[in-house]
Image (cartoon, rainbow, N blue to C red; front, side):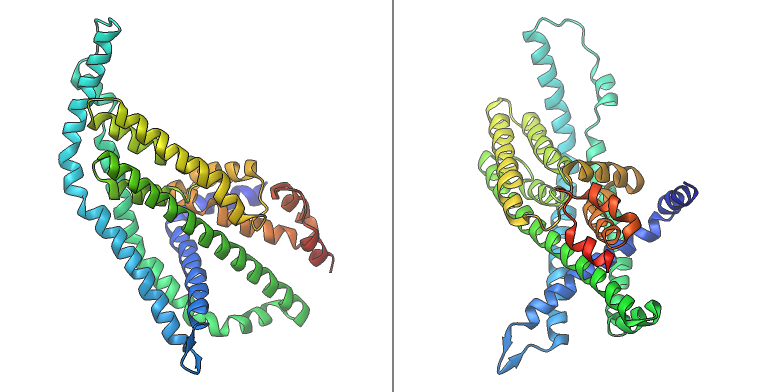
Length: 342
């Protein structure tokens, strides 16, 4: 209990250091996998040089980050100018509903806006973008040094283990963690991209303001299990409700985005993911809650990869095998059990 308490304190107060480090590790793992994939492409009579494959993978990541930054920051002034209009529309909508149902006493506009301030959303978006930009340089620095250490990493593992058998076991753990996390991120990126593109089409057809921004936020929120998809439907639907004078666009957006999230989240993603994660849905929710309370929004994004890593490590050792069974989706950790027994 003392070790758990100390660990929680260190995780909470050290989040400014640990979050960029964990994100750097994930970026390194993804870039390494992308570079390996690019390097397997035939380059003349041989394969592409490692340095060129790595350069192309880094450039691809930088282009994606630049596009995200341009979409969010470029639309900032327009969103800020539109917030007062949405607030007025919201007040008018409330007054109309009150008139229809015979409600005579309503709070004043100022009182209502103190309780429901849509500028908080803009502030949240601005702080999130600012946090991302401020930590991006640190993440890139960690990633670069990890690539520099990659050549000697196996030598360090061998020295740490002390004997070849333990070194091989540590290497298997690292490879399995990296493989599962890369697979999870790849599948999540594919389904999140599909969700964002389809959502953008619906929002654009309806005429919702800032469709590209909402599509990007839906793409990013899709990395947060369960809760992200709910928020990704609710936020654009509420904006639609405030933007238009009729309820038809609201129902189209809510039903359309909800159908996309349901189809991709319950049909496409499970088919692609299969049993590669083998995590209990209930444990995923608990992990999401725990890391969300501990590290906020970054913790929600990192909850599944951290849980995958924790489950793999626990499955490799006999005293913690029970924890891995509890975290698993079906209780089947036969392979890990064999490795632990060996």
